[in-house]
Amino acid sequence: MDMPVTLVGLAGSVALLLWGTHMVQTGIQRAFGARLRMVLDRALRTRLRAFLAGVGVTAALQSSTATGLMVTGFAAGGVVDLVPALAVMLGANVGTTLIVQLLSFDVASLAPALVLAGVVLFRRNRSAHARDSGRIFIGLGLMLIALHQLVGLVTPYEDAPSLRIILGLVSSAPLVTLMIGAAATWLAHSSVAIILVTVSLASRGVMAPDTAFAMVLGANLGTALNPILEGGVGDDPAAKRLPIGNMLVRLGGAAVALPVLPWLGRWLVTLEPEMGRAVADFHTAFNVALALIGLPLLDRYAALLRRWLPTRIDPADPTRPLYLDPAALDTPIVALGSAAREALRLADVLDAMLEGAVDAFAKADRRVITGVRRYDDILDALNVAIRTYLTSLDGDALSDGDHRRLAEILSFVSNLEQAGDATEKSLLPLAAKRLNRGLPLSVEGRDDIVALIERLRSNLRTAASLLVTDDVRGARLLAEEKRNFREIESRATRGYLEDLRLGRAVSADGGAWHLDVVREAKRINAHLVAASAYPILERQGELLSSRIAGDE
Image (tube, rainbow, N blue to C red; front, side):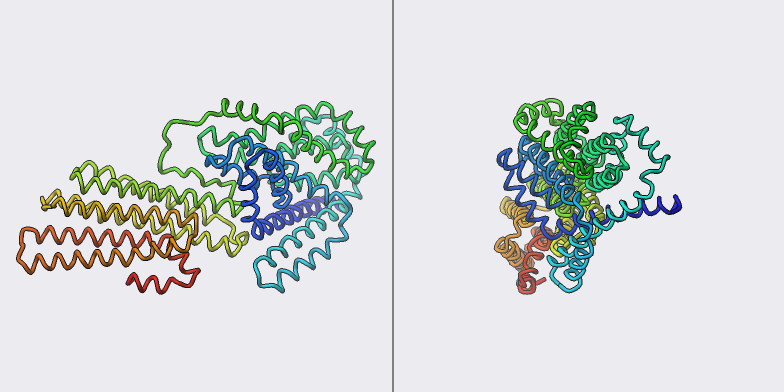
């Protein structure tokens, strides 16, 4: 067989292995991602439960990176302490070894059956859960086929002098081998794939034990590099505690294990003569040893990380996203959670705008109006950032529930941005108009406007909570506010017409101005209702009646 053809075959086999791993991960995330996130959330109480949850969730997801992104989100938001978060990562490192253990056995004969079962589930079932399960089986089958092809391609060359010379040079420099393993894992974004390739080469005798073990150490370092180099953790050092802490644990373990590989390798080979199994066992033993040593020391280690990476206290640019982590885009359930957290910032900014509008009407200060208008720039910037982030998600990796959630977040941010535009371009100019024209405003009229805007702020808080809770009763109450604002507008219209009928010329212009304020508040409220209440009621089949009641 020609060398160029073999190299293409090797590259294709590795690509097939990576694609199979991707299918397994996306299938599990789509089918069970939300449940696994809930399991992880509930387990973050004690370090032992957190460790076990990290093992289980990562064994299911087959991605310690995905587990790390979930926990990083919890830790960055202050939901979980650093100690259980680090315990989860120790468990995740162990959990990612289980698929390597399984596939290190000779199970290639199962590949056709797995692919067949996956195709049947994917083609013959309409339910999303069955189709996602089909993706998992197909992915496992592709992984086994790729490993079988890899071994077949390497076998004719295992005694080639040139290959032996190259591997001999590499084996004489274990640090270089470790760096190659780390770089390959970082590029492939999969420690499972790189270690499985190493297992295949070692099982055919192409790679010496010490070289294979050094590659495993490098793969463990490479998978910890991705969250640090590519994660959008921002400039706050505190947000980097978990990924850097996990990296330092693995780096310390590799620094201890690398010098003793010659003795450790001979000992492992005597225990497990089959080299492929020995490599898989070393991978598991390395991470189990780190967990056994690290779990009792997590309190002191977390204290050191807090000292080395203190929380930043300087104010951040308010237009910059805080939670949109690019590394989470490969894990839709995490990315959607990050986008929802960022969307809640829009609610905070809009609330600040409305609070400023209260001051603008109550205090009659032009400087207040100018300051409040700046908030709209923040809304616009965050809206663009969230939309760009969500449209970067791979649509094929999203379940039906993920697509629905994505649409809900987009509706929320779009309507809040439009509510901000209405506040900045219509409501605040009315406050400026009164100052410019000297329109009279009684204490009672001022109190009515303040109460109206405070009602908007209350509805905004309800809309923000509905984005998180998905509560049907709250959605009905918020939708009812459309009817209430229409009644407020009707009363204001009747009052204005009564002023005109009685010939109150002095207050007529002020009455028209007051009516304009009520109408703009009604328009802002309509966006708040559409932001959160309508998506929930639409799923319940109540949307049409709610819109008719609100006279939309």
